[in-house]
Length: 107
Ligand code: FES
Image (cartoon, rainbow, N blue to C red):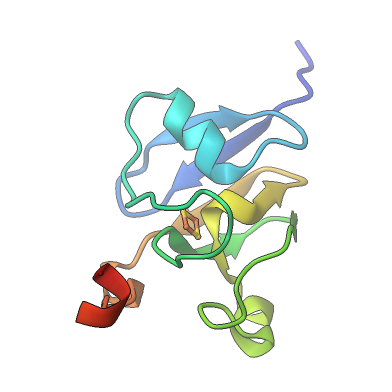
């Protein structure tokens, strides 16, 4: 049976889930009820949901250049809340990529 959803695989765990066209990677992950990455603003601004896309096609919505510059984006380091898969896709979450909040940012 042909479906128009994409299969998303998280490499570290091997966990798979489906993503609808024009649905963000983060939203698809949250719908599984087992979102394995930190979530903040959901709008591409805080950088908490940064992941590494390892394979597959995707497009990006607006995201903070402070957290993802053009070079990083070209390497597939993107914000899950602003990534829209265009094919089956694999990704990896690297906790070391999570930005450290300064006291000033927390207040
Ligand atoms: S949740 Fe803030 S950038 Fe994705």
